[in-house]
Amino acid sequence: MASGAEIEVSPQGDGFRVIVRESSSSTEHVVNVPDDYVSQLELEGCDLERLVEESFGFLLEREPKESIMRQFELPVIERFFPEYPRQIRMKMGA
Figure 1 (cartoon, rainbow, N blue to C red):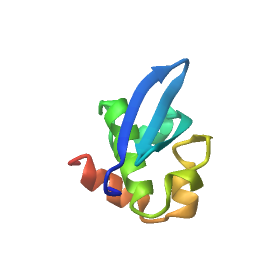
Figure 2 (figure 1 turned 45 degrees about the horizontal axis):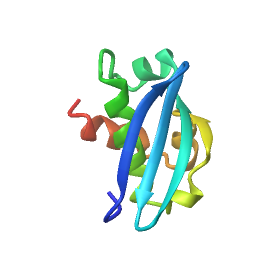
Figure 3 (figure 1 turned 120 degrees about the horizontal axis):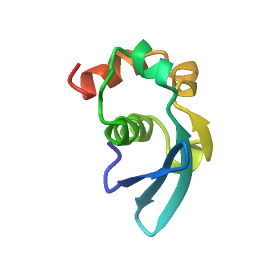
């Protein structure tokens, strides 16, 4: 994870609100996690808040928080980073 980044995830509507704090600035994001994508990742029954947090950790290892889309569905990550499914399964201990 990016050094000094704090990731706060909370439920919001059908998805999650994510705040990333780093140094003296922060960004806010809304993320949806489709049920069928959780199955596709072979992570059925996982803690969705943790999945979103680990996914942001994955993104922050690759780009600054300001480059992360403000609103997206989790499968979008895979379009930009094909290694995401394998890496997130490892991070989630699957």
